[in-house]
Length: 275
Image 1 (cartoon, rainbow, N blue to C red):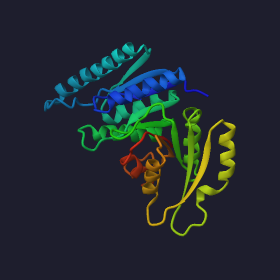
Image 2: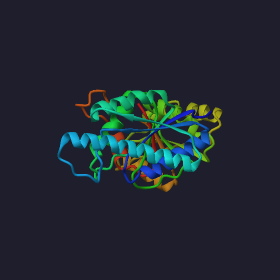
Image 3: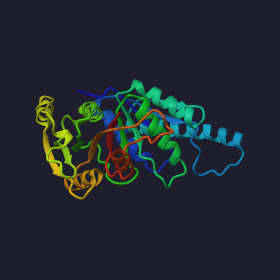
């Protein structure tokens, strides 16, 4: 089971170099075709231009430079790549990227950094990609651990269709890992969490795929679910989290639920998410 087509998002952020390296490693591991994509609407972080027409022109040139740098890095690494620039304003370009992403097995994005000027753009790209692409999203954190290829994964399992889809979308990456922990969190006074229903059958199913999986049940106690998951990631030396994404196509409403939003904000390892 392998990935055949991977899409990686490109920009001029500090995390771009690591994300590109991760994409190269993923493409090589799966012998997959790699495509880099950027937005012409991304404003160069080092320029302060007030004239709107000049800014649009400079942003277009900047996108071409981002693509050229990616192509050069790929050539230096001996990797064949394709590239694409999405034109239009932020909303139109982000939507174009999300629709384009439907043609790939995996989409590699970056976690939005609230301290960066392009935070809102990157967040919009993430929202559109999760809600409209129908493809698994591999989020790279802007800080923290990102060991590629990953060796130990954790699945935030609650038994929902979104979690089920995320887990199965991630199978090509999970196969061959040293361990996959299926985490079920009981909240409050629950004796049995929702995700525990038929979880033993899930374990058997994963073993049929050749995964070295184990089920871990934990009582949250006074902690919330995101805190429990983050603590378990640290304590178990996990380098990949798999979870379902929740939201609505109406961007005027809250895009992500509490657990999803908190984990994406406090990301310390890469996260694979499907909606």
